[in-house]
Image 1 (cartoon, rainbow, N blue to C red):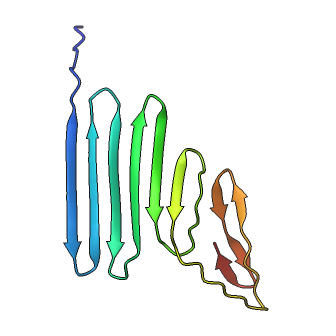
Image 2 (image 1 turned 120 degrees about the vertical axis):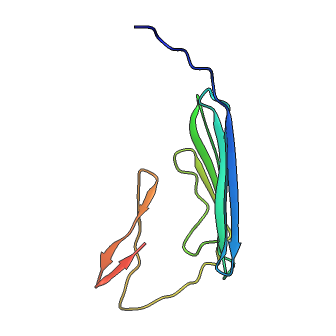
Amino acid sequence: MIAKHHHPQPYKFGYEIKDHHGEQHRHEHGDGHGNVQGSYGFRDHRGIHREVHYVADHHGFRATVKTNEPGTANQDPADVQIHSNAQHALHHDNHHHHQQQQHHGYQQGYHHEGQHHF
């Protein structure tokens, strides 16, 4: 059996979509040696947006997320940075308690008095 050697195949792709619902995009390039950089994101018709920039290489996967999505806050779990400029609405209801748990960098919500909260 003869082993075939394949030369590294760099690549690059991207797209952008805009319509009455908002816009989406993704761009990525790799050097063919396992090093990848890219970004993707969206903006909806209300102005809610998320932009993710990422790198994957011999140091692992790293991402930075910029968003104004409701319910987000600045975080830095597991080599992912989240930068939020969401408006935090304070709503207090005497009959319901909002509680969150942090578990290995992930936010977990749970049911309380018939509602599910994150």
